[in-house]
Image (cartoon, rainbow, N blue to C red; front, top):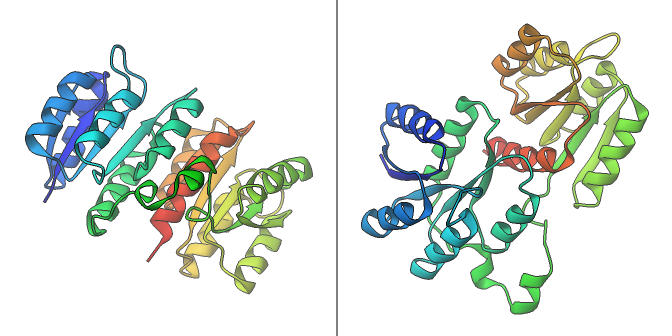
Length: 264
């Protein structure tokens, strides 16, 4: 279906992505360093490149810079891990197609790949921006409506302030029953949903939403290590399960991913 290039210094990550994406009919090329990755890019011009930012020698930003010099319109999806905020901001300014956390489930990753494949190739936004616009970060293309559901007022307030500052439209619910009522009034793009709440817990909320054909994304928050509970959440189609205390940068990336997945 498409040629995909994976550039990551972790051989296990490359092998895993090649195995999973190959099963979906894609031709997958792998490189364990930036120099070999650029050589494969030049030779094959893949439909898009999955690029790790943290690599010894030539890091992901230098690789992305050289890819942009060869093809300003090349689709590049960045693979992110812990402590990547500064590098991610640099990559964002260079017009990457998307960001994917290495902690995402393989099903979600494949879903994003398939969705990217269905989209027409178009120039990155930075190509049409003025020099002044490039210097000013913009969230207009990433924003959506979000419902934050958590029985802890401090967490709701923290998430509302963080997400509202990034131009998301944010509503709050203190429990599962209120969340269901708010979704009935107006369906959000993304629900950030606490798993452990009194009354109707997060898993039950999602079950009821799925019964009503809710098609938006759901991101679970939890302080629990109950593997069966977390697995149930993933099987119900959640975008991701994030632990508490919440890593806000990872939450924002996951919301961006969820907005992509929830688009018709």
